[in-house]
Every structure is written in structure tokens, then in C-alpha cells.
Length: 113
Length: 116
Image 1 (cartoon, rainbow over the protein chains, first blue to last red):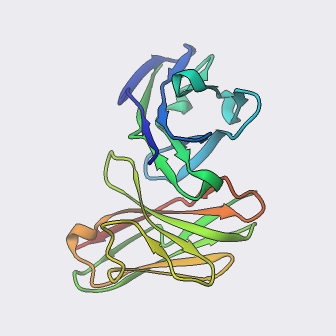
Image 2 (image 1 turned 45 degrees about the vertical axis):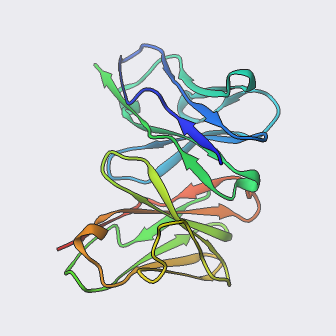
């Protein structure tokens, strides 16, 4: 069965600083990987996804993520964080065909002005 | 595109009553919809997978008689919490998988249920 680990429960960065959120996955085959963002009391918005091909994927809101098979990682990055990026970020791995998603425990991002 | 709505956005009910939550894909057809439950400051836990025109598949530990799921059309799935109790209070989120792009799930805004 697949699993996802997000080792950082909380992260605080200053506005304008760079950001990296860590995600490690466990899955026997080639994974489908996703990053979602959740604002308080809201549903999840898809930031980006990786299925195959170029291991550096670009998403919305200036986010990118890099798939590293050797490290079983799919870390999310943003070169310059904006105050509006404060939210909960979830990494998820999908089984073949995207039938089920397994989510990490999430990373709460706080942005200091 | 790929918008999913949920109704209601929040509901308060008395213990013992039933509550129905609707999940709609607004601009795409969804052969599969998923229902998740999220406790405060926790991750999402998949409750069941709903396929249009067939019975839902429930995750281990989820009571299918308490959480009734119906997926009657390609754009609508409903979750009914029957005989609700305070421990059923939670944030319920649905997602829908676009029939044309089957690997990606699009999420609704969630429904907050409070059972008194």
C-alpha cells in the first residue's frame, strides 16, 4: 500500500523568502503525485501533479515540484513566498489510474510579513 | 474548468436525524467521486469511492449503513449521514475524477457537519 510522509508539520517563512515543503512517498510502481493547498475551512485546490516525463513540474501560483525517484521525494518549491500563500499544503500519491489518493498529514505554512 | 460544488456548506442537526450532502461536478462528467472526512488539523481520510450507476466501495472501518452514498448521475453524488451522532461531526469533502482525465481528482469546498 502507498504512503506519504510530510515531515514538517509547521513551517514559518518571511514574505519574499524561498520555500521548500518536503514530501516522501512509498509506492511499488511509478506513482502519480500531487500537491494540494487548503485554506481554512475550504476544500483542496490542485497546485500541480506529476504522472511521467519531465521530473520538474510547474504549477499554479508560481509553485513547482521536482520528482526524484532515487529519493522517493516530491518536494514543493516556490522562489518567493507571498502572504497569501499561508495555508495547509498536502502531498498525495495516487494508485494506478488515480483510483485512490493517499494524503500526507499536511504542512501548515505561516508567512511572516 | 473542473469545478466541484458541495451543498450545504455547513449544517447543524440534532442527534438521531439524517443529513444529506450533495456533491456536483459543474463543468465535467465524473464517473467516479470520492468522499473524504477530515478532522480538525488532520489529513483527509478516504471514506468511500462512488461510481456512477453502481454501489459505492467503502474503506475499511467505514459503516456503510451509516454513511449512505448514491451516485445517480455523472454529475451528482450524495452522502447521507443516517442517525447522526455527535461523533459524526466533522468536515466532509468530496472529489470528482474527470472522465476525460482520469488521474486527477478535483475537490469540492467541503461541508461542515455539527451534530448536537
